[in-house]
Image 1 (tube, rainbow, N blue to C red):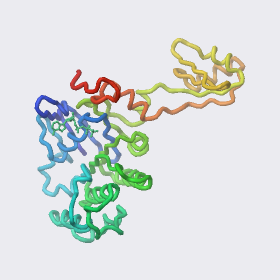
Image 2: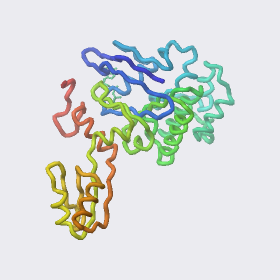
Image 3: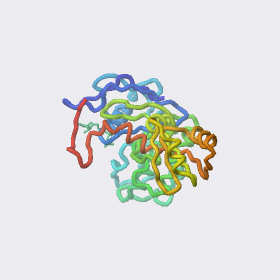
Image 4: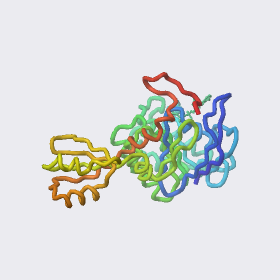
Length: 309
Ligand SMILES: Nc1ncnc2c1ncn2[C@@H]1O[C@H](COP(=O)(O)OP(=O)(O)OP(=O)(O)O)[C@@H](O)[C@H]1O
């Protein structure tokens, strides 16, 4: 479990993380989202003791990271896979890491196999592709068989098979009861991988809820209706609180009424329906709505809006 209390980080006059409180629970995958510069990496760095909070605290399994006597066994971390530029082989790199914690060759071989690195394990890490580097970073995070995993953009640079592999691995680690905190800018991937989301915007928590709740609360449900009596149906559904859009000669999309309400109203009026489909909103839409006022670096606009609040 990871617990942040009033966690704050200031760099000079810039407040990167602004008094955040959250708990990352075991047994589920928690996605860590937010626009560029929202404070995700800074928060992750503070969790693992790479940055010192200006105020507040963050603990892993009840203790500050530096208080753990064998941190690799407590928390597995992938923060910057590109940071490993070494002349060592992947095998020797992992062996050297493990040596600090009494982790030997058999566990190194296990994580190499788990991450699909067998064929390159004896090659120099310096020559690894981005995807291989990510796999090695994940292998390093898993080395100590930790109860908590923190991974910043783990699918960055992976091919579709690799992305799917990470998804399954994260789900499996959470199912084993581990705490998994994962950041990614790929919303569709996050929607498939995470159970719960913590969303940061300009250093503050703007949402902390199950994925389904975030999608439901940040978007309005849309229902797609197909009927040979479209004009009648459109006037039946036109209410001050609904938006009715004619998307095809026989198709309406209605926002603000449920499929049940539309179906029952059509039935009472004797209108034949050929389709009645609730359209599920995407996490991407919900995320865009949530963060629309939280973007620090906006494309095409007048650029930077630092600390506008
Ligand atoms: N060492 C530093 N010195 C000064 N400012 C910093 C430093 N590290 C981060 N910042 C600033 O703190 C803010 C939060 O940065 P951070 O990297 O944590 O955001 P992020 O959410 O991880 O962004 P991204 O999605 O781009 O990785 C940004 O405005 C960034 O410029």
